[in-house]
Length: 179
Image 1 (cartoon, one colour):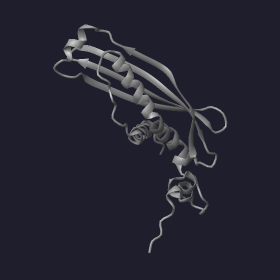
Image 2 (cartoon, rainbow, N blue to C red; image 1 turned 180 degrees about the vertical axis):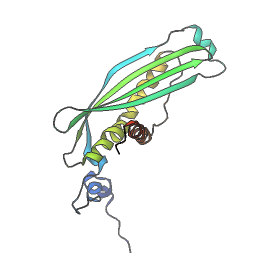
Image 3 (tube, rainbow, N blue to C red; image 1 turned 90 degrees about the vertical axis):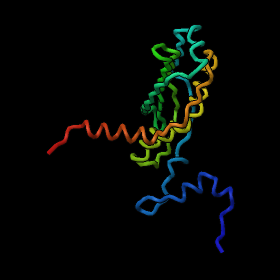
Image 4 (tube, helix red, strand yellow; image 1 turned 45 degrees about the vertical axis):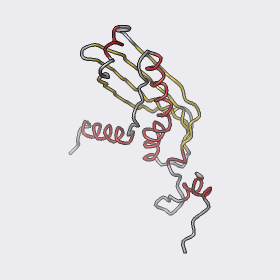
């Protein structure tokens, strides 16, 4: 008969971290449990509604065409603390007319355990931290569009791993090869 651990042991960070081991067999922290967010903040924010009020009548029949871009940057602060900034740009157009433009830089101060390897550190900063702050960024965008007179824009979840992997592939192909 298979015994299941108590449900609180499965949900605890310590139990999850203990399930992963490094090459020497010593426990290594799971990236999810090794990251904590000390604070979150809006670093820069702009909502432009350049064609109000005329643009509102254009949305009676169809929604806007959206162009969304996301970028992530991380920089060390002190000791195990890092700043991660998720930059989001949204441009909504209806035919040739701009409906709204959102530019948001949302920052987080993340604390990463010392035992995290360099490879896992990069993934924690560029994937895990953005994933953790995304719901707050999404809420800001939804409120701004609603307060700007449009239906709330509810961003679909973003695959930060895919963005990170894409940036790594581009930087690897752009770097000169030595023979």
